[in-house]
Image 1 (cartoon, rainbow, N blue to C red):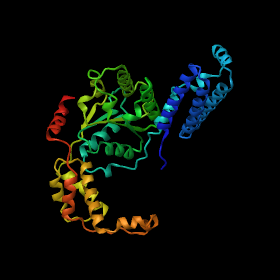
Image 2: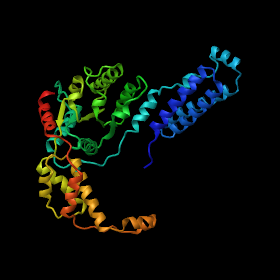
Image 3: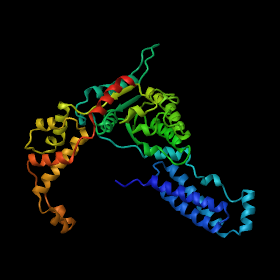
Image 4: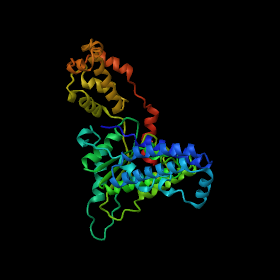
Length: 398
């Protein structure tokens, strides 16, 4: 799969465009021309990432406009330049504005669509959590009896320690419900340009409605919706306000436009209280209990064809306080040690070249107790008991 470099390319475009505009305003025409030419190159590259042909065409047209402006500045005498600029006859500057228009931002949001084949069967345990998510979907899409109002919950907040499977749950929700999955991180929404973050949030929900039914998963949502009483700069206030409007579903004219918003956070106490109200279903995703830990070991070891000297039940007992992700890391560390033991000449084979590695078949063995002991030294749980108490108390506070 090709790497998506569109964000970094657009960031470079903005940087170079600003330098060009500053140089033009200062009358440094040759420097401005060179910078506008560079900006055109970045915009041409950025156009290649557009999924929508009409958006790609607009970006290419913007690049062409930049080239024309660069050519004009390169060849025009300074006195004539000042005269033409005062008359507004240097071309349509609206074609090459620094800000991204709404359709371009919506195109960027489409890049966040993630193909997922994950289903409920891939998530060990968590029966109550799965049931709560399924119920939200059922209440939103099922027909309502005449003259009866039932408020459906299209917002779910998953909170709890890191590594407990919140992202996996969201992916399984989208995969099991045959919905478009928008996998969003706070960094995807935040922008150094004032006002653009709010435009991105709106563009995200517009795109989701077009691809309905859709699931928007916002990881680390506290970065977008931190409490306004704790962090009250104007940019943050705008983002929270926009997110509130979108979560309210003001623009949902058609009830068939199903968009389920799932927020995830490790620090729910940092969220704005108004945002919390927009997530009527708040689900605590705790560290796995004994039964669930055994299920996770079965998935990470037995179902992947590995045999272990230590019984799965003993491993589950030893990992109280571990998250699901930490158990996965533990298994990976033990497997890695076993593979090194069984393939002592691996470095020598690598030195022979790529084909030698491709021709080699890995040798495997039962994972020994000492290899798990080594893994326990390398992988330690990070969630402290006092933090667990805080999560558990929050079930009644928010």
